[in-house]
Image 1 (cartoon, helix red, strand yellow):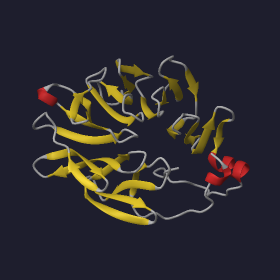
Image 2: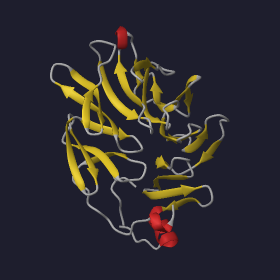
Image 3: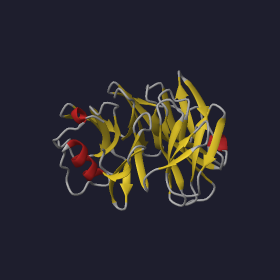
Length: 274
């Protein structure tokens, strides 16, 4: 962060639930409405209706969006928007319930969730790259992925056998690995795929170096980090917080005021993007 990068204004970008942010912050995607949703995309002060579906994560340049659609009698299915054009993802596993979840930073790999593929008693992430689908079972019977490295080679989410016992799970070229307690999940992955942000309600949350296993404690409730993992944002002691290796965890309002002279509101909504 630099002083120049801190905007001292607040802009209303519309009434919708934000779910994805481009790398430079110029594009925000999300949805309006209930469980079936209506996808929207905000850029340069303009809110664009993308049609039926719930938009999820977005590529770094803001051109590719992962999402989920719904059709009566069919159920949920994965969808993707590329440069504003909506595309339904037709899976190689017939008659399954499925969802879109995230997309790699470079937009090359689409990730989703499929339930009971080929009548198997499991739910697992799938990936789509260059027209090729791959199924990625986790450590336990039920798994999902919500985060990805820039090129999609490393991704993460959760794995569990019983509801309420979710464990953070990372998929690397070597396969899946479970990390943390049965109350944890992957919140973010660095662009280069070497570091993951783990939220763990039992053991405390931390940065995890994938190649070495080294951990660094961060704030109580992390929600995201910069592409290199040097800055983590989230919540600590019930308030918005920011973490760096140099200064540890600090109150976000205090940090912005002391470091940049920016005055922010007394409270930030839980659904807000930082």
